[in-house]
Image (cartoon, rainbow, N blue to C red; front, top):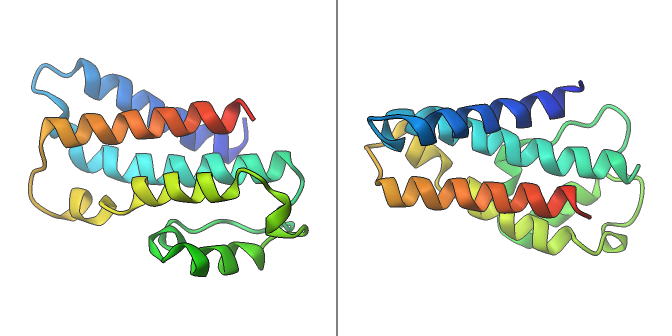
Length: 135
């Protein structure tokens, strides 16, 4: 199993554990924030590797996905061996990664969130995973 698959598996394991937690999702808030962020980036990286468009040795950085979309596209385009425009799903995937990443630091380092926000984050991650894997 490659590192991207391991990261996604770890995120899924943490989600499953958190969903079963008697104390609720908030007792897993920080771990979920980190792992969903890492898992989202790993999903995109695995997708790009599968498409054989990621330059050899390139690792995507979660911080890139906090930027506005045009800047992210420029950053990602420099990491690709093919034009970014040739990847039809890229705009949609970048929007989804932004939605996973935007509250990462607040969830990881800030005050307690709510069960509803955590559940919404998990749902967005699982939906993104399904979309990336079914392309």
